[in-house]
Length: 115
Image 1 (cartoon, helix red, strand yellow):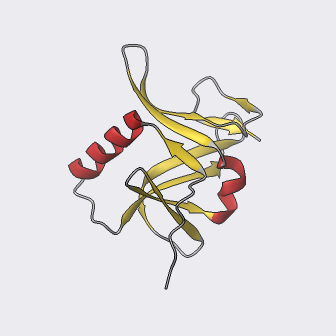
Image 2 (image 1 turned 90 degrees about the vertical axis):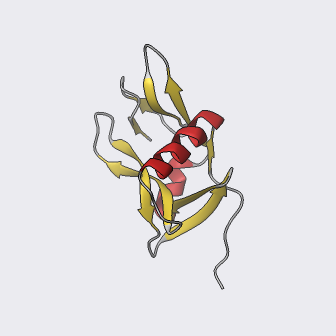
């Protein structure tokens, strides 16, 4: 039997949760879909964040964050441990933001970082 970890390495704010549930509903995603949080090479600072709904894969760890099912590739945890994901909906900024304590530097757009 598979275990689900409850101590998630990332935190979702109430604004992020509200927006994620809205997206999940609008896209009619099944319960098989998880929120994937991760990193990939690229971006102006070295790594870019990955955030989107996806199916669970073999090397993923599964977490529950405020009723949102989250998956993350085990290898990505070192880059994301302690990160907070928020959603801004203001006149100046609109979209998901990433507050990553592991980032040594970030780009101006806030979607890539170096570690």
